[in-house]
Structure formats: structure tokens, C-alpha cells
Length: 140
Image (cartoon, rainbow, N blue to C red):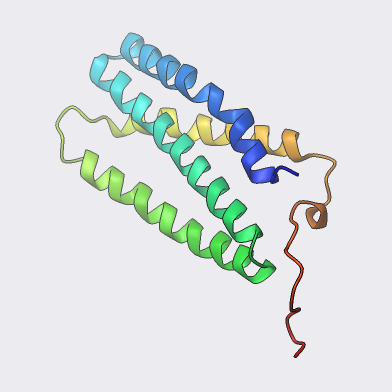
């Protein structure tokens, strides 16, 4: 059985390159090539974040429910920190446009969340993860 996180990645990743290209073209047409690059980077950051999230949850899901919780919560904080670090780094460059970056980042995030809801709709949360048999927590 394929983990739902890997299925999400498999079904959404083919849209990454076209989305980056659309963001670059839109930013370039609306302003300039620098805005196009900034928007394209924003889209790429969202897809990289989405992929890291999915892979880390798939890994945690093979271990235990506690690990899923820890990776989901801790991973969110780590990935958010990485995004902030990328923004801080990019703001050092004169060509970087924060507005264009956000114009690529926000709609892509919303689109991926909508895709995730559609792909996983109809599944119960309890059906999404399987854990290996073995010693149960709380038993000796």
C-alpha cells in the first residue's frame, strides 16, 4: 500500500515545473525578469516544502503515531524556519522582489492545499497510516 503522503507528492510534483514557468512568465510580463525570478523561487519553495513535509510524514508513519505527531509539529516549525531563512537570504539581493515572491508563494500554497483536500477526501484519518506490528505502547 502506498502511503498517502507519497501519493500526494506523486500526484502534485508533475505540476511543479509548469507552475514555476507560469510564475516566471507572469512576473516577467507584469513587471520585469527580476520579479519573474522572485515569483518562480516562491513557487519552487512551496513545492520543496510540500515534498519535505510529505516525505517526513511518510517516514514517521512507518514508525509510530507519536513520531507522526512529533514530525508534523516539529517539522512545521523547522520548515517554516527554513522558509524564513530563505527570505532573509534573498532579501540581501537587490534584484529580489518580496511582493513577487509572495505572489508566487501564496496562491501555490492555496492550490496545493486544495489539491491535498481533493486527493485525500473521503478517507478517514485513521485509514491514512499503518504502523508495524510489535510492542504496543503502554504494555510490557
